[in-house]
Length: 292
Image (cartoon, rainbow, N blue to C red; front, top):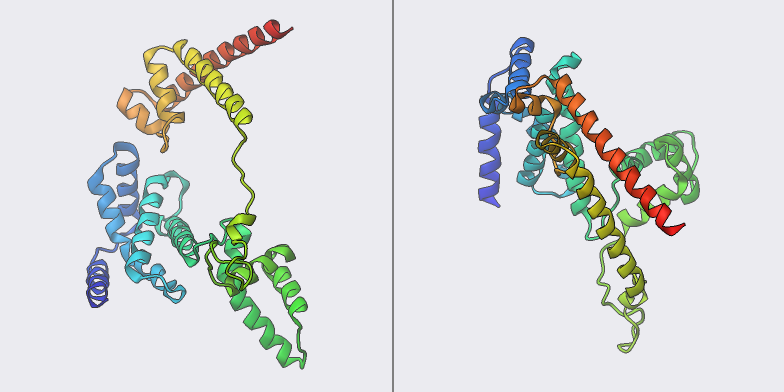
């Protein structure tokens, strides 16, 4: 614990000593990273705004997560912001980065709040991080008017205030108030009672459905490979990098690697998709003719 605290303090002191970027320098670094993939520019940009990431991470300590983990998640959000930032949009990087840092920290807090995931939709996030605060304010306002809200009235007002359905408020209230328990616990005090896990429905596909699903996937895979075979080497490379990667490449980065303009890469991509679409349409027509 003491070592983690010392590490957090060292990181904070280092971040506070980082340079403060003016708008012009920030823009130059952003262009250098976006257009040339200059890693030194990226490092300088991220280092300059680590103080922002640490400051935002500190605001979430009340949720019980270790500070070093919060800082790590904030750093990931900052790096993602730097990778996706478009300097042509005319906004400061810090303004853009705040959203990514906050989203990364909130996702981490919600993932680790309970063994059962609390939820990840925008309404669930809004409730998770704002419900207690809104409830306290509504209670104060009601008390100042001499009113006393029952549980149902409070839920309704929270739903209206946050702008979410009443059912979402009821669900989140139960999850925040409850605690995790084992699915191997029995439903009654009887040692011979049925375990809760026995009541869960098996969502796995039955054998016949699984066979059909696997067959369909194999067929679609064969069609896709056939369509890819219609492309030349450069077109296949563009399609793979743009659509088949977990982290798709940008038109700019591909243009830099291939020695082409962003617009030319976009044209080649569109032409490749046109060839693939034509091949897949012919394939589907053959199937329809065979079944007729």
